[in-house]
Image (cartoon, rainbow, N blue to C red; front, side, top):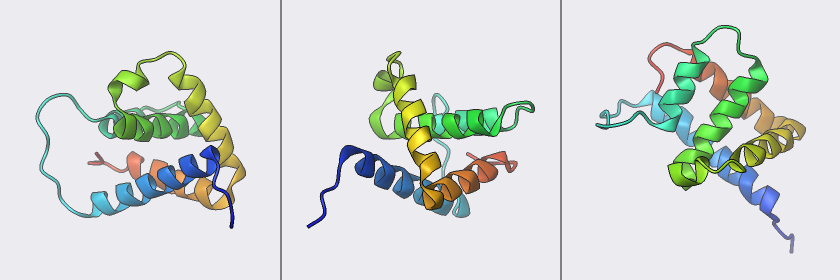
Length: 113
């Protein structure tokens, strides 16, 4: 039996989130009142010219992890180290890297979020 380590768990979680994000963008959603979601904030960042692909990818990873684990954890200074580590790990997996690139491209589309 194959053991699943923490890195594998994070990759599976992000794959699921990226796939859900793609499906959610295809169906209309009612807007939630209050502060914008982390995904909406990432979409707003994607509209800013001059940000590198790596910055956009890390912003999306941060948004997905924030959506999953909450704003309180995301405000911890160590959270950015986790985002950088997850991005580095994703960059080594061709399939997940492609999912991330597709998700960033979707964020760049008008009306995303």
